[in-house]
Image (cartoon, rainbow, N blue to C red):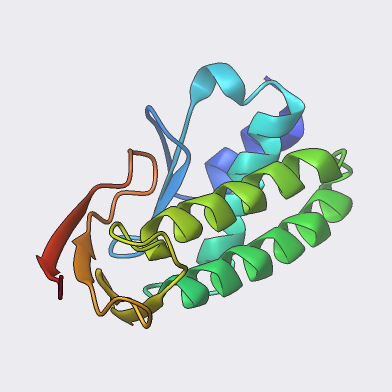
Length: 152
């Protein structure tokens, strides 16, 4: 393992796991050991450290999550430069694009297909057809929608 990455893991509360993530409750970073050796894995680790450094704890609306992700990737760029690690701009773009796609899926009306307004953390409402729906929250799973009410 790269000495720089080894030191980053030692300096922070990092645990091996199945995903790269930051748990804001106990300030633990989870990383995928097999991926830590490659450029994108190193960036993913730095990205989670960026969330921790920036005190990213929670959000209520998808647009807030997107803002947190942008902030964390900017901090990731700074950390990569500090540690002399290569920055893969295309990988960062793909990561941010994945959040854009997830948000679009959540906000697209299941009845008429229009992009709609988020009412609260997991509920959306359509301006066009007055449909309201609830969505699941997990970002790495398929978006599921449950219509709460709809005018026919």
